[in-house]
Length: 386
Ligand SMILES: Nc1ncnc2c1ncn2[C@@H]1O[C@H](COP(=O)(O)OP(=O)(O)OP(=O)(O)O)[C@@H](O)[C@H]1O
Ligand SMILES: [Mg+2]
Image (cartoon, rainbow, N blue to C red; front, side):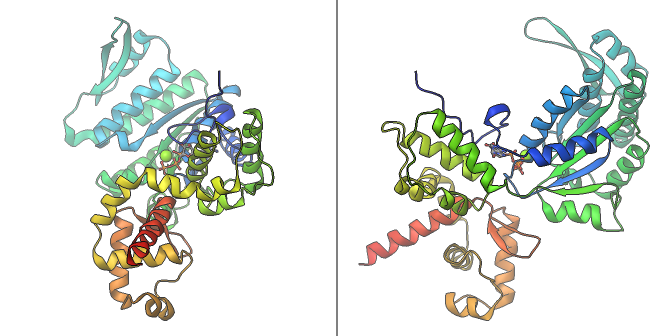
């Protein structure tokens, strides 16, 4: 039987399929042993969620329990209050009866018994107050989580993913209230993770905002190339592949070091090389175009939704990814401008999640393969011209 493809590019990747991040894990481990507050920030698909789940395993080995919540799954404050109270209670208290008893002492939340498909019972939570009191329910829930951790003499880590989504809850009132509550929590460490870098940074670095200096900001960068290369080669070797005189550096370059994109291309190399058990340089160089073709329906839709000015700009950024769009040279070369209309186009592309802006002010494709799709489109166009 052939080995399964070890390069996973979707969902949470753990164990032997998770590459490197040893430094980051050990840093987070020591922060969480001290029950600190850490804001984990990176562009999309850099591996924040995977990192949290791998950290959870390590923390577990040291007797620390981790509760993970994705804020995107909770559309309003009430559902977040219910979610966090329920998850923490279940993590710290295994008896359904005891959880129900604990929750029944609360004012804004109450227990709810859930019957599973197999007839098993689980302890649930629901709102016991009208929606207008959802924030009070959240604060009461958080305070209950802390009391429970204290009582159980447990060190608990709460990881809130997609934290920049907090803005959807009536903004800063919720932020201030949460901050005030968790400030007193001596038995819980917090990780707040998010990909909207500008939102995350202004939440924590603006003196006017509640989370100003409440914790350390950890910017998750790319995976170290040499470590990642070792991981990739190890798997190809295990699978019996030959990679003689193949340079994998272009893989990291075309992926712009985004782990998702590296994984995606390695996954394709594994499949295309399966029959011959060989990886050639040609395959490596073609990999980003193969992904671009596989995802073309998605890129086609984006392209159709873009204005002519935005398309020109996207084309220019594909040809010259390091370009400074506001420079005169760029505007002359690609016939775009003036700066005010470029700004409007870029803002709209960022808002739609097609581009993102790095803290250094550069614009990059949120999906690195879109660049290759556009390059292919351009090539097909010029082939037709001839
Ligand atoms: N260290 C790693 N080893 C192997 N694959 C990884 C690693 N980090 C990330 N990936 C791959 O990238 C994909 C995206 O990672 P993940 O969902 O953790 O990123 P994220 O930063 O949480 O993204 P988003 O901001 O979109 O939520 C994963 O499904 C996985 O395939
Ligand atoms: Mg994530």
